[in-house]
Image (cartoon, rainbow, N blue to C red; front, side, top):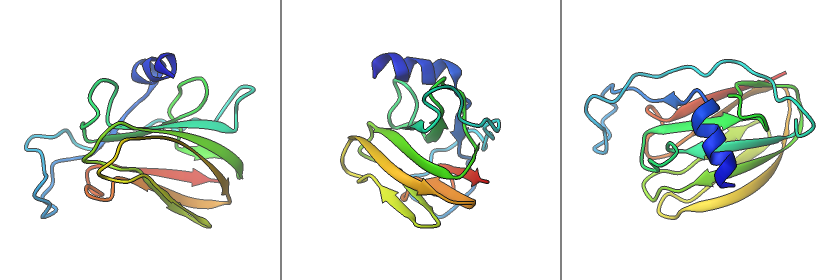
Length: 144
């Protein structure tokens, strides 16, 4: 798992949330604006296994959420199908909440978690957010 996390840190484009005023008292002054992850379909023999990371490698409380395929490439589009999403949520101030057609999975805000979700993704848009910081930590996944 540590090797996979290191690969994510090197190979991912992190979706980092901006510093607009959303009325959230937890806002971080000067936070970088949203960076869009490059669209990349899952590839390779493990094309149905994805990894989600809350925060950044070595910075669990960073305002970031990312999704990657087995090769470590950022994912923003996928074909419909059943997927396993290995979630790493090492923060006690963030969570990961994935919603979309038939999917509503989340980790707890005040707990750390290493979980695997098995989800059936159908065509449409799925959103992964941190519930306490939805404007600063948001990732959109398009399923075709």
